Image (cartoon, rainbow, N blue to C red; front, side, top):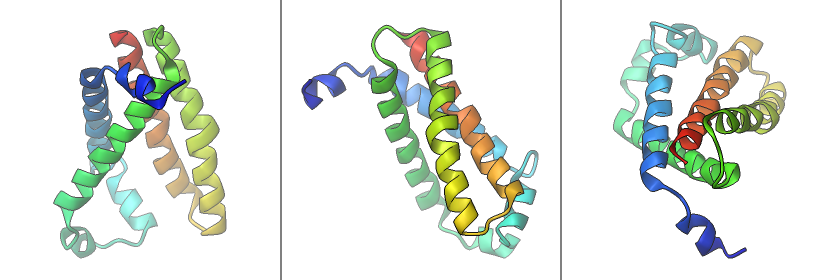
Length: 138
């Protein structure tokens, strides 16, 4: 299989929409309305730390990374995906690869279980949502 044919089959509009939706969920997930305050506390980030961050750069790169994740999930779920198969594939990716990778990293870096639940939980929503949108669009 040639790499050019794999990427030629991607529906870029569906990838962009899926990445935007998942990115927006992240904005809510990490906001004070949901887990933002607990997340910042677990990372020992002050309000000043957050205010002093280069947020356009952070958000811009986070969206680019969301696009990359959505692009490769589109390749992974294949051309005959459905809403359900896309959702399940996204869930498998989130559980089998993302959450376990976070878990290993968080164990060795001694990050809290609460932080793990917040961060891994986001990706347990992120990838199934992307997969469902991509599968629905096929």
